[in-house]
Image 1 (cartoon, rainbow, N blue to C red):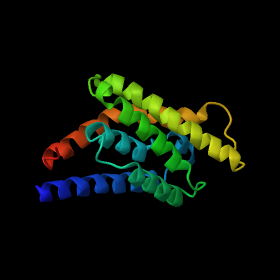
Image 2 (image 1 turned 135 degrees about the vertical axis):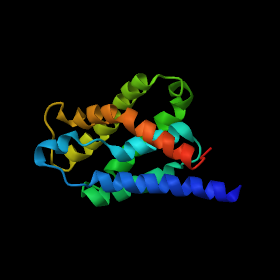
Image 3 (image 1 turned 180 degrees about the horizontal axis):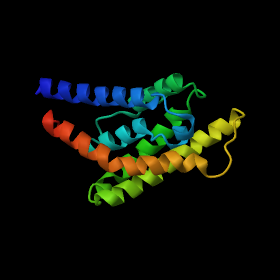
Image 4 (image 1 turned 90 degrees about the vertical axis):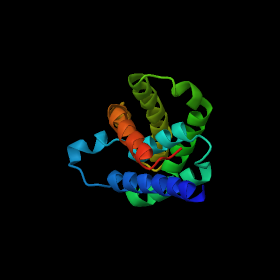
Length: 162
């Protein structure tokens, strides 16, 4: 029983590490606003599958690490991830019964909510974002959600994560 639990944590940490690597992968300038929030998507997935396995402290640490990687004000991603994680923990039983396209709409709402504190922190740092362009990652994340959900479902089935 212990090795299976250990494998579960290793797969979760590796999925977050890959998401962090992809979050800093260089993109052309015109595509940077459309980069999906992969770390947040992975957090939403694992919380929906294992709502009480991932602690808010671990997610806060992941957010702080993402802040350091991306060079944004310290605490921006931590605040966003913890807010979204709390909402996911409150609503995971309802969302499990959604169709995949409804889950994608829910992901759009969650990532949009995560973008609001990020936009607020950026404004406080002196870099205001005009218009609704800050919601572009929410749109691309919602489009990416079905693919990510299918891939992580296959990974969790392959490693027999229960």
